Structures are given as C-alpha cells and as structure tokens.
View 1: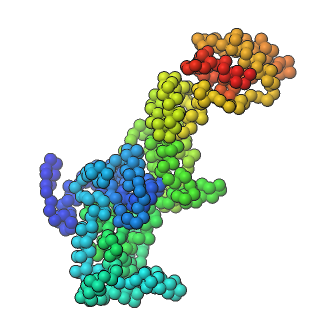
View 2: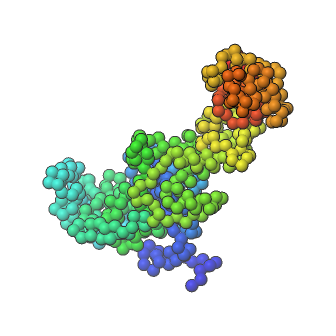
View 3: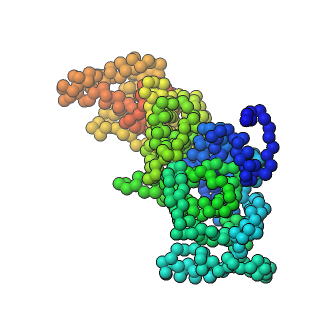
Length: 551
C-alpha cells in the first residue's frame, strides 16, 4: 500500500487495528520519543543526556520528538522549572516537534494536552475501566496503618509494599467501598496486581540487553483521592500509549520500575514501547570515580554550562561522546556534519557508567572555538556577556572592531591558538589589552633583573625604537639593535657560549617588553599585541602609560 500524498483520518486508534493503522503512517523505522520531565527540580546533566538521545533517535530517521510536562506532583513543583526546561531545549537547538507551553498558550501537535494536570479526565476514564473490570480498587489504608505495615515488613525482613495479606481492601464489595467514599473517607485507587513474585519474566532493554525480573505482585497506587490525579507510574503509561511513543529513554535508576510498568501495559493490553535505560553519569574525584552529584558537583546542573559560557556545540559534543563509544571516530570522519546525522545505537552505551570529564569538554571546546572566525567568537561572547558580565560587554562593544582584532591574534594560521574553552575565560586571557582593566597588576618580570635594568629597557624601547607602523622583520631588528645597545646579546648562539659576557639575551629583552605591556610572561605573539595597541592604543591610553605603571 502506497501512502505518499494521501490523507487519512483514523478513528478508534487507541488499540487494535486503529492503533496499528496509525503506526503505519509513520515513516518506516521512524521513532517517536519524548522528553517528559517533572518540574520538581531544574534540569541536570543526566536529564540533558536523556533529552539529547531522545532528540537524536527521533531526528535520525524522520521521527517525532515531543515534550510532555509531568506535573502531577504539584506540592513539589519548583517555580520556574518548566520555563527553564523549555529554555534549555531552545538554547541547545533541540526544539520539540510537539509541545504545549502554558505561558504562551501555544500548542503544537495532535496528541495533547501535553501537560499531565490537564489530562485528568483521560486518566479517570482509564481508571474507571480498570475498576469496572475488577483490576483496580479503592484502598482505605491510613498512613498510620501503612507505616505499621512497613515497620513489620522491615522487622520480619519481608518485601516492602501492599500485597497478599497486607492488601486488606482488595476484595471489598463495590457497595461498601462506595459507602465509605460517600462518608468522606480518604482512599487510594490501587492496581489489583495479577503478578506472581515467584515467577520471572524476561525484558529486553536496548542498552543493557536481556534482563530477567520477578513479576510485580504489589498493588501499586494509581490515584489518590487528595487531588484525584494519577501517580507517575500510571499517568506515563497512559500517555506513552495514547501519544504513540515508540522509544522511552530514561535513567538507569528506573530499571527497578520495569516490573510495574510491564504489568500495567500487560493489564491494558497495550504494546510495550522499547526502553533505553541510560547509564549513570560518573566523574573523576581524585583517584576515585563516583556518580556525579546534584548536591556536590556544580557541573551536574545545566545552569553551570551557561554561566561558564560553554558553546552549545561543545556541550552537545561532550554528551554525545559519552553516550556512544563510536561517536568520536565518527566525528573525525564527519567534521562538518550535524550531530543528528550520527547513527546512534543504544547498544554502544556503556553499561558500567558514562564518565563525564570536564577536561574533555574543555578540549572539545578549545578545538571548536579555535576554528571559528574572530567575528563569530565575538558574537557569541557578546551574547554571553550581556547576561553574565555586563561591564565587560560594554567594554568590548565600545571597542568592537579592536576586540575582534584581539580575538583574531594567532587565529588565521595553520595551527591556531587554543587559549580558552568558555566565554567566561576570555576576559582573563585578553584583559591586558584594555586600559580600563589594566589596574593593580602584578608584573611577572624575571627576578634576575633589577628594577633599574627593567626601567632602562622599557624607557629606551618606547622613546627610541617603537613604531606601530613597523612590519615584523623591522620590529625584530630594532629589538635586536636595542639588545646590543644596552649590553645584552642579540645572537643566541654567542650568548649561550659566553653568557657571563652579557647582561642577558635578546629573549630577555623581548620578555621584559612583553611583561611591561601585558604584565604576563606568557602571551600570544608580542609583535601583534604591540601592533594592535599602537603607540597610543585604540582608546585614550598609550603603551608608555602601561610601562609607567611599573616604572
């Protein structure tokens, strides 16, 4: 059957032939993935890796990546978390194909609402269906009773949960249950589990392979009377089914929930989506490797990378590198390809954990930034500093053309410099090029030279030799002339043979000038720095004024 250029309306698509027909209209092999965060905290690096994999797996074969807001736990929701999740996805150019933004009222997609708190009626319909079929029931256990059950189970070294004899209300008659509800008793709707803990079932995870679990026999809660909203386990199952989710990417910590989710899908007769459980993200801590901590490690939070000013490209590349072991080799052979062109394979994820190394991120970022044009770096720096360093932003825009030239030092060459990995580092690399920042500096002069020696070199150079119009050869010849005039040696070979005959070498003279104008012993090309500053600089300062701060 050829479906190209055809329009079909499908009814009854929740199960059976309707569901199968709806699936057929996806491109063959296309995946429907979702990023479905709970707004109970801000996005961390593990969440971001899952979202990135969601996006890649959908985009590499013409599928759908959608965003779902799982906000059923209103008591724990953090103000601004929803907006920040959206911001992160937009910042990293991973905009969902389907979504609902409550603040703008914009919805894209035909499977909404995409906010769980707005889907209450849908969940109630499914819960009612389960109760009618005798697969769910109202449970009237109080918190005190459940605490007592837990204490006894712990004491007797039994599994924790409501099952077997502990599920005292699973056979309550409908009339009695209705009477208790009408009398105002608090209740929880529980799944009437049909599982047998002594039986095993096999489950194939696309990352971890085949796994075996005991069946779930716990009557898990699926809705509480306090807010009439479903629990996470129940809501996500209904949504994944109705929204046609084909692949669920989530953290390794959810592996233990597989028996519950397997039973729920089986109870409804729904097709189980394919699961990809992502490995734990690890970090080096001295000689040890441990799980990255949201509490201890600032790099665990996605806010860290924006505040530091890491480029979007660099962060995504670092994540993709730890997500698939063959990504680096692919990138080397496809340097200009979009990361979505990479054929992601869950089987190539590390089951033992993904080591996220900030040094690795820095190297990726330095390589990336070194290949950009200076004006591109300026534009990125401008965008970052507007939010995170307003004073510096004002300064670089005051001298925009000059700043671009500064950023271009040793960039347009075969092996460009790789000085910085993030935009927050740039100020610390180029500050000495601005008179406004050149205050209270500590000069890194070689201690073997006295202040009088240094003053003599700087004064003579600026008064007798410096000319901003000199080409590089002329400039260096003047430096050598200055070297010989002041009793130093311009011939390095001769100096090495007879060092005691001279005050120092031409390298020493160059370094004194370098430190005098920058305060630093290590900088990019000194000639270019002097050329850019010029005798009177780009603003109202002069190179002599920098020397004079020391003199």
